[in-house]
Structure formats: C-alpha cells, structure tokens
Length: 389
Image 1 (cartoon, rainbow, N blue to C red):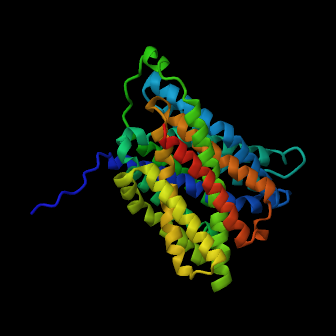
Image 2 (cartoon, rainbow, N blue to C red):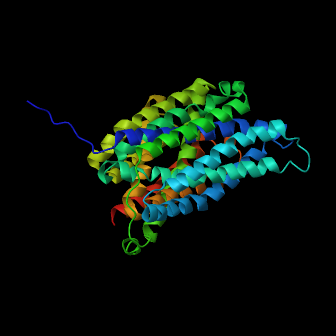
Image 3 (cartoon, rainbow, N blue to C red):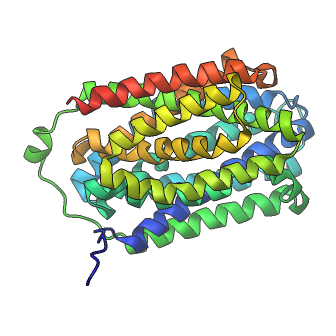
C-alpha cells in the first residue's frame, strides 16, 4: 500500500540561500549590538547612547522598510528584478559595517571627527533597510502562495538558530576584535548575496498597463502594519517575561534562553507544515491563543515551567506565519511593500518600546504577561479581519 507524501512546489536551493542571507543579516545585528556600546565608549561617547541609536534606527525603519519594499516592486515591474536595490543595499551595508570599527581604531576622537561615528552608525542602519524587504519578497518567486509557510520556515529556522545565541554572544565574538569580527560578517553578507543573485534569474519586465491596474491596497497594508506592531511589542515582552520566569526558578543562566531560542527556531519546521495543512491565518490564531493562555497560566496560576513547551509551539506558529500573512494579503505586484509594512510595524513597536520602557529590567513577569496578551490580541484582531476579506 502506497502512502502519499506531500509534494511542495518550492525552489529549495533558492529558499536556503535566502535563509542564509537572513542569517547573515541577523549575525550583523548581533555583532552590532554587542560591539557598539564598547566602540562608543572608546570614541568618547557614553555607552547608554547605544539605546538612543537603536530607537532612532527603528524609527527610520518604520518609513524606510515600506519605501524600499515598494521601490523594489516597481523595479521588478520595470526591469524584471529586485536585485538593483538588494545589491546596492548589501554593498553599502558591508562597506559601512567595516568602516564602523575602522573609525574607532584609526580616526582620532577629536571634536572635528567625533560626529563621524554616530553618522556612520545611522547610515549603516539605513543601508540595512534598503535590501531586507526586497530580499524577503523573493519568497513569492520561490514558492506557491499556499506553501509559503513551509518555505519561510527555513528562513525562520536559520535566523532563529543564529539569533538564539544573542544573549551569550559576548563570550565568543568580543575576543576576536572588532575589525576581524565586522570584516567576517561583511564578507559573509556579500558572499551570500552573490550566491542568491546567481540562483535567481531575472523575470521579464511587466508592461506599465498591467502595473497600472494593480492599485496599492491600503486597507490590507493597515492590517499588516497593526499585526507587525502587535507581534513586535508582544514578542519583546514575551521573551522578557519568559527570561525572568526562568531566572526566578533556576537562577541567572543565559544558556536557558539559548535553549528556548533554539527550540523556537526548530519548531518553525513543523509549524510551517501545520500552517500549510490548516491555513496560515488559522495557524497564527491558534498560536496566539496558545501563547496567551499558557503565559497567563504560568504567571498567575503557577503552572510548572514545563508548560513553556506550549509557549514555544504557539510562538513559533505566530512568528513563522508573519511573512506568509503579509504576502497572502497583498497582490504579487506589491509583495515587497507588504513585507516592508510588516517590518515597519515591527520596528515601530521596537522604537516605542525603547522610548516608553527604556529599563526593561523593571518589568515584572506579571506586567510582561498582561502586555503580551494585549499586544497579541491586537495582532489577532488584524489576522481575523484579514480572514474576512
């Protein structure tokens, strides 16, 4: 008796290469966040200025992510490829990334040159927004719409594995020195982008009459923005609450959060398959409900921490469904704009979080659980509203 296995119409080589690019982006941000306070101090600035830069960078991303995504959509229509923006953004990012430690080491921190480092930091963050949304929008080229959750699960897996070590990264990379560390990350970013370009042939340009009959769906974009904001704010509070709950029971141990991050990353694979089977929106709603209920029960009812596994499963369904959710709401003509709007909403949440909650160490698990619930309910409302369209 033959058992039919699901066959996914996905370009796996291209998807894995795109996942490697997302992993390189994550690596760059981890290195940036680990080194910037130290580099600012060496150049005569207070280390606390790093938080100010993070707020500014996220605020800029609110506008730039949708803008670059939309520009890449237009480039795809006119020349058949998004790689004009992707390549330009990666080259600028890699160059500026190497320049950051070089300025600190080789430029004297006099009054004339002190502003050079802050300007370079902001310029690098802007350059990173140029290519992220256009690159992720390539998923529409690599997978059928119904199978996007499976394709994106590979991207989530790669970024999640690298991002899981964010809390312990100082134990590894700071010993290499800033020049070598930043240079390695820059060359990895360039190499992976070159590989992605090789495996992604351009499409035929679309005539302008066809482009004109696809207006921007503003109502769908508002739902994507709201979902991005809710998931961004909820994710930040959820991870903070989980970390403090683990710390209360097992003491300070950063490797516990590494294990949680890795579990979320690997859970993305079955989450993608599950979302394809039942529908991405339904999977996201299940994930939101499971995450909220379990988090509240752990914090308020004192459930054993073993129930954290349910949070991991639920949160994985949420995170893995985000980009397929944005792509599913947008016509292919505006896929980059949709992804940029999601990233913009997420960045808005991170920027406001830094403004209103600059000292997250003062957030109790109870406040974190309640805030997570409210944020994810906002995202839930956006997903439910999108399902009615």
